[in-house]
Image (cartoon, rainbow, N blue to C red; front, side, top):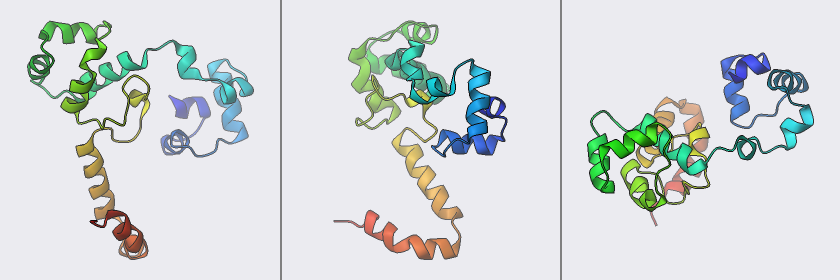
Length: 162
């Protein structure tokens, strides 16, 4: 969608979503496509304006994208609710916040990611600990020998056991 609005490639859209600076022409194209002014796009909090409940959207995101086949019953048992309640969440019902800690645990989301405030559903990075570890391993496996040699001292320092 962003690539269409900005008139750029998918790879460039990914760069933009990761924080690369927008060109003036990309900004104008997005503003035109979204019926907003350049300034409005730059200075608005579009998430707040959307009226979306971050908690609800995060739970929906976790259930739709990270709940493996057959795990709905397991999650329901952990939360001490019916499987139907989870189905209701998928249809738009707002989950009770008392389930927050259990959802963190079930989906391996670090407690530092507040599900009521941090919009995980907008994240391009892996959100759970296992996926984060796998992402790091994949990147290290695919890094060139030269780049690994250059980065190894910093990585060794960061990952050193105390």
